[in-house]
Length: 101
Image 1 (cartoon, rainbow, N blue to C red):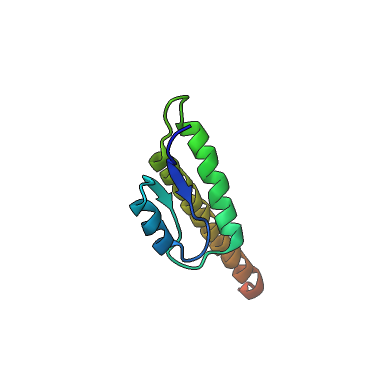
Image 2 (spheres, rainbow, N blue to C red; image 1 turned 90 degrees about the horizontal axis):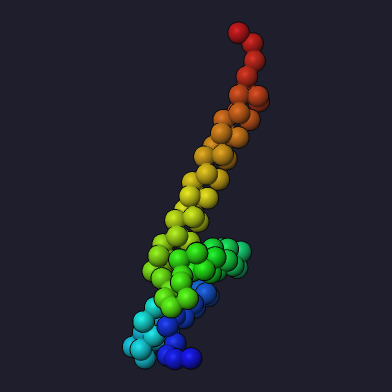
């Protein structure tokens, strides 16, 4: 029902293709500059499309905010996972290294 509004190029090294897609008139193009694990690209897609549904109305879609929401969610999850791993490592170190005194 109209021109293509958004392309999600969810694979490794799709930046060049994204630039060509933009040159052909697609206003919103999402891509990866580098290698990406399948699990990460899948997680991003799920978060992006969920955010797009949240951010959209019947007549408009907010691709930029959906992208920002998805990337923020992924960064927050990474921080939480990283701090959880640090806490587990610290606890493990105390158990192994703990002792007498």
